[in-house]
Amino acid sequence: MTYKAVTLKRGKEESLQRFHPWVFSGAIAAADDTIEEGDLVTVYAHDGTLIGNGHSQIGSIAVRMLTFDDTAIDEAFFEQRLNDAYRMRQALGLQREDNNAFRLVHGEGDFLPGLVVDIYGPTAVMQAHSPGMHFARNIIAKALTQLPGVNNVYYKSETTLPYKAHLDPMNDYIIGGMETDEALENGLRFHVDWLKGQKTGFFVDQRENRSLLEHYSKGRRVLNMFCYTGGFSVYALRGGATLVHSVDSSAKAVRLTDDNVALNFAPDDGRHKSFAEDAFKFLDNMEKEAYDLVILDPPAFAKHKSALRNALVGYRRLNAKALEKMPHGSILFTFSCSQAVNKEQFRLAVFSAAAQTRRKVRILHQLTQPADHPINIYHPEGEYLKGLVLYVE
Ligand code: SAH
Image (cartoon, rainbow, N blue to C red; front, side, top):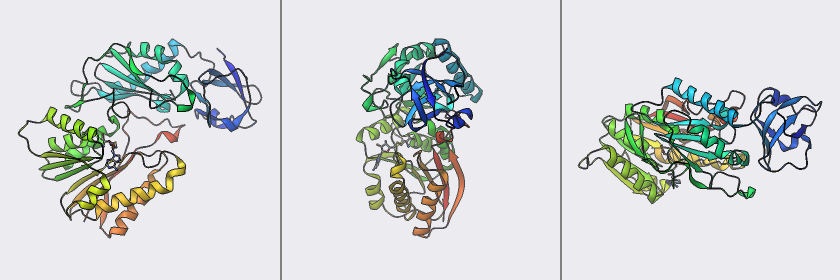
């Protein structure tokens, strides 16, 4: 099946022949002038060879490739891709009695650029990042409910669709409705607020890193900075922390954290306390040596490449503020989820923080995103989460 034509400049087919899924606007020699944003298009090399089909978009990424042949982008296409994604998550063992929260579709990582789907028990929460996926939302939702255990599809595009596209984004159920807002992660219970929360309501990408933290928590006083829904806090409590303090600048996040702690621990378990405060202020005001396990999981400091320099300064300052007050023998879990910051740059920022505070620091673990956020080998840009676990002396 072919769609409206986009023809590339000579030589610009090379990255696509290596299955990189983006066509940049500067690579296009000619395009059908009836193409509208979100349309399905067929991309041709300069010599007329068909490269594949994709979604068009206005902006620097002009086409997001869905196929590298002439396969039609129809119901059967989405069913197939979603089945493949589901089968991979089954191989990972993520849908279990004690775990029903996981990412089913991670954009390019699942060969579906522009689409994200997280599963919370019987509900799939779906986000379109491209107009093309927005237009396909109903057939995607239908295909989702054909997967085992998925009854409801909530579509959340108000914050993810390009603002300029004037697309009528929506936040609502496409299929089904609210069945339960509770999800299970490694046997721990979490309320997930997909109606109002950030992203799809929960950060499933920290699941394995939270498990690792649990392992280090026994007998430690824990500070969970940028706690959001309190994922790290709940794992630390189960791991036997003697005290857990959760901090987030958003009062709503702090409430969500308190709710999730209450969902998992007895009301007379007095180990947890939360604070609605700015991270930098909290670190400035906190007593020296108050915590011997600290988590720093800030929002992306660099949303774009242009913000890289400031972001690196931000990571250095944040980590230095924590390191300078940590006692001998303490542990720091520090993260960056900025896609524009690579592993080496993040490590250099943390190195600078260590050097500046003159602490003896060793790297215990180098962390990344879990397997349900796969990195398409042809699209290295999909690697975004970086973490270091440091032993501080
Ligand atoms: N660690 C969390 C995810 C963190 S998301 C998890 O595992 O789920 C980042 C959080 O940082 C958001 O909840 C946001 O409200 C909070 N935040 C942003 N800027 C902040 C600041 N200056 N001080 C404290 N919290 C901040």
